Each structure stands twice: as structure tokens, then as C-alpha cells.
Image (cartoon, rainbow, N blue to C red; front, top):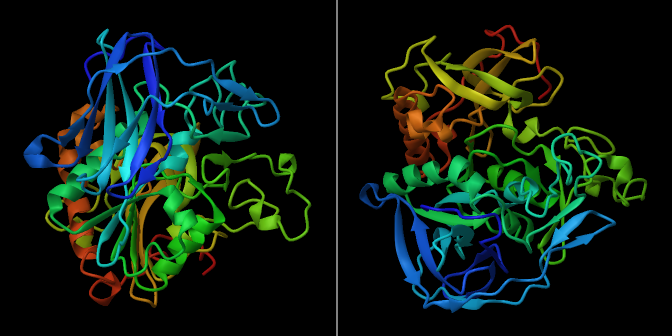
Length: 451
């Protein structure tokens, strides 16, 4: 993308977050330009090109769509009343993560993400696009799950439900580009068999991970429904390896409505209409670790969310672990800036599976509070292994200096190699058979967490 253009010069969304190969979807575009063209790019490695164009539309007449509607009860912004601009047929498109680039005749550009999902994940490493988290942070229409039209600090004005029926803010693919794209590049380059799905498939289809070798959650995968969590936990307990290449995962409990086009998350449990309804306690949208049905995420991911804003070096503790093979690290090797902007830690009193092995231990100050961040690895009786990076910059660091925050090119080499090790080992099946975790919590002086 060369020129984003003015705020509403061109923007759009797809009527589905994902489709199967050969299925069609509608694009709903608003633009002040006379015409626009759509180009579809599959993201990957491609010898360093990082994307391949698979389709291009003819020039499409532009139109300015009606203003978005605000649903007062939940402060939900919706553009569901827009008129479709064109239908896109994905026949011949390989499974994968795609960006559709909208090119206005005025030279303005925006992205629209879509996933061409896999019908089966059997025998494959599954990449999950964190579409629920993308939407939670999407401030298009001046509302998201964090703030309302007054910006930062307008917590009371935030949305209680956010709709997929609207464009994404900024360039249209902000979180994908920052927190997912580089990991997909590494995965495609690795040569392991891959499958692609989104958050919604984990909710809709409890069998979607049947026979999968591994599931890869990317840089920021914060918003999970109970069905999403059950699907992934069941897969782990049947031998599917898991990797969380970020931090702050599985933090907020959500629910889907309107056939998956609406994400509900009140955050304050007492605001949710289901609060106090007998038998609905586990559907109340609040913190996973909070009332009325506390189920701390650590039982799935190990280290759980601890700090924002986190800003520190990532420090190696267990250099001989197979994940770090070929990286050249030693105990105490540090990578400046790689720990941020949110971080996880092993927290006494929060249940974690055992054996659990801490691989990195990074000291930091969180708003003046001394704390530590952990990367960890655990294994379970099914043979599955689970890795949690514990830093949201694991994927960003793959860009080296391009990540900013003082991240170096040495961090890029490290995170890419470690991720490649994870992908290739997890692709072989239950990793605990060859690589059982070696519990070291006592060695670190941690109080014994619940198991």
C-alpha cells in the first residue's frame, strides 16, 4: 500500500470473515472516487515476495455509502445496511490468509482481510487468524470494546458488542500486519503442511481440529468464547500441540450472536443481561479469571496476562531447550525491546498444567511494579505440548529493527528460528513423546501453582 488517502476516501468490508475455497463473498465498499479496483493477495513466503496476487477485478463504479448506524443499547456501530459493491468468487484460490486491496481511481488504498479457510485440518498445522481480537480493537465508527467517541478514557462510552459488518480502521489490516503476517511468512517458508481458520470456526465447529497436528495462535488472541476454548482444550487433550506466539491470550470471555457477525463483550459482568440468570453463568461476558464463573486461562495457556505496558528485554533462562536449538543463546542472553507491550507470567494461585518448564524469565517494571515475564512449555498425558511466548512482540520481533521499540535484527533471527523449530516439531504430532517438559518451577523459587 502506497497511499492510504483521506479517512473515508475508500473503505470496505467483506460479508464473511472466511470462506471455503470456491465459495463467493460480497464486498461492500464506500468511496468518494468515481471507480475502484480490487486486488486479492495471498500472504506467505513466495521466495521473499511475501504475497502473491491471485485475482483482480475490473473497475467497479464507486459510491458513497450511507453513514454507519449506532445501536444505542450496546453502542454497536454497524454498516450492515450498505449496498454490496461486487461479489467475489474464490474458485482456484488456495487456502490461506488474504488481503484484498481496494485501489480507488483517486489513488487512495485500503485493505480488507479475508481467510480462505480449510475444510479439514487433519494432519496439518493450523494457523488461526484472531478475528475476534481484530474486531475488539476496531475503532471504525468511533467505537470499540475499549472506548467510545471521546477516545482514550471513554470507557463508559465503549461498545458492549461489536459488529463485523463495518470496515476495519486505519489501513484496514492493522493488527494482521503487525501481529500475524510475519508468523505466516515463517510458517509458509517452513514447508510444513498448513491449514487456515479464524476464531469463528473454533466456535462454530467443535470438530474443526480433529486430527490436527498443532494449532498456532498468533501475536494477540485475547477474545475467546467458551466454545472456542472447549474446542482447543479438547484438541489438546487428544494430542494436538498448541503454540501461543503472543501474550494476553484467552483473557476476555465473549459470545457470538447474529450468526457470528456480532461479538458480545460487556466486560463488566453486572451489565450483561445474562448476569444473574440461572444456568447462564458461564456465558456472562467478563474476564475468564473473574466472577461469576471464574475459569482462569492459565489452565490452557500456562503463564497468564500480567502487565501492560510492558517494555523490557526478553531474557533466556533455559537455553538447552529444543525450541531454542540453533539460536546460539545462553542463559542470560537478552533481546532488547522484544518483551512488550503486554506480557504473561506464572502466577501463584492460578492453575497450570504440570510438568511446566519456564524457558525465558524477563524482569521488568510494570508501571513501577517490579514483576517478571515468562515463556513456558508444558506437556499433557495425551502427548500434546503447549508453548506460550509470554510476550506480544514475539511475532513483531520477526521484523527486526522494523518492529521498532529497540528490537534488533538479532531478535528477528532468534524468533524466526525458534518459531521454525516449533512448527517443524509440532508438525510431526504429539511432541511430548520426544520432548517431555522438565518442570523447573521449584528451581525458580515460584510458589507451587495449583495443578
